[in-house]
Amino acid sequence: MPELPEVETTLRGIAPHIVGRKATHLILRQPRLRWPIPADLPELVVGQTLRGARRRGKYLLLDFARGHLLIHLGMSGSLRIVQADEPPLFHDHVDLLFGKQALRYCDPRRFGCWLWVEGEPEAHKLLTELGPEPLTDAFTAEYLYERSRKRSQAVKQFIMDSHTVVGVGNIYANESLFMAGIKPIRKASALTRKDCERLVCDIKFVLQRSIDQGGTTLRDFVGGDGKPGYFKQQLLVYGRGNQPCMTCKKPLKEVRMNDRTTVYCVVCQK
Ligand SMILES: [Zn+2]
Image 1 (tube, protein in one colour):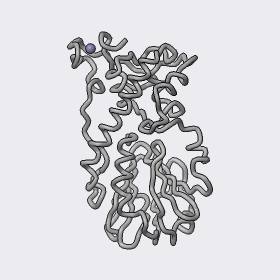
Image 2 (image 1 turned 90 degrees about the vertical axis):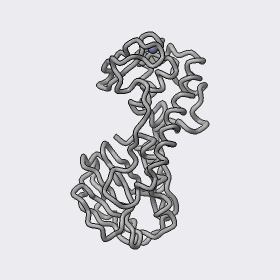
Image 3 (image 1 turned 135 degrees about the vertical axis):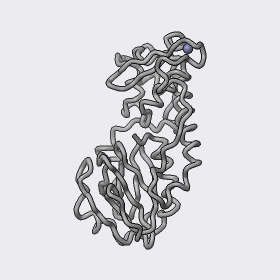
Image 4 (image 1 turned 120 degrees about the vertical axis):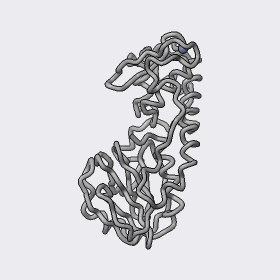
């Protein structure tokens, strides 16, 4: 599943090719995504110049003069820049053309979305309740500490909740909790200020490192039929259940929490 680093890498991969250019055509081959793509989307978009492209959580926002395209990659979506006349493959559901180049959307499982938003996109119901961006100054230890008071849910669920902070997917939650020495099953309300300092720092670290690694894949966004934006990660605990902890060598414990694989060290994480 594309996580925040993949979405950020996608943004950096596509933006230089499309920002400042005029949308000349929109081809909808399959409008049935998670929500139907509005049938009048071509009329809404075509003819306008793309003023900017940005990310909020795992959503991409393409800013035009009269509105914004709100795109989510869902479970399996990807975007790339292709020559407009390159024949589409089976799961290439949307092409947004900018002259001879196209922004092409592929999504085999069709859980993504392409919506049109007028007015302030931050006020859209999909964005309005999102917590702070993890890599900004709004996400601080003090914020996490205050927010975690009276929360009886497990700390792993707490940090994966997009109301708390956006973009901490399952892999990043496992990794950052290991680095911070915090058991995923501990109650959020039991976090100390010191824990929150470590956790905020480690969440920022694992996400930033992943984005930096993604930077090496930026040229994959142009042409071809590959799956850009997915990259290998150096993982300390995720996918390593029952293997030795890299710190203490005891076998890592693997459990299911909210139907998500959770791996931690019973010795190193308190
Ligand atoms: Zn250990």
